[in-house]
Length: 200
Image 1: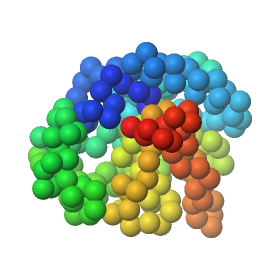
Image 2: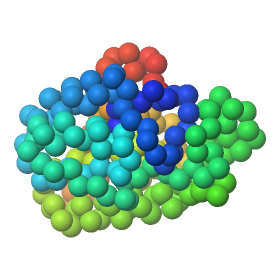
Image 3: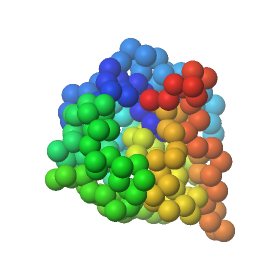
Image 4: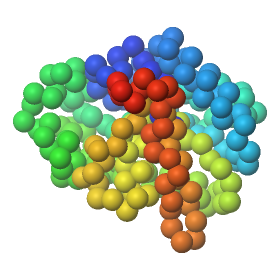
């Protein structure tokens, strides 16, 4: 699940910058998600990224499920390096933006992380979660690109396809991991219909 909306969602590439909290709308999204997820049975664990916006999103979910949200560094946002905190409108004008959209498997953010390294982190979390909670449901509250990478991996799609996936704020994606392989049940299902028309 992606974190809720922040004051800069869709405007800035926040990355790992500290002190970015949920907007009022994001807090409402998180509470609505908690209400919905409270009906899910067999939930063994709730994990979240170390960043404030994911921790704040996971808090009402933890309360609704009677669980403690476990912070996991493997779920942290991609390290955007020098691009951290830059306005998206400005970044889209850079020649490198084409690589981010069309061939992310070849791209490393300046003084930051590559999408291949992000994929390795996703694998690390997935393998530990499957080993620790076999046959159970695990909820992970994280970031859009982390989820896109996880969905590409589950689909068996090339990493270069990840920007074709929309992951709205507080959207829920579901993957079932079976012996025969992963099955994507839902991908980036938005919490509100308007997000289908105006995705962040």
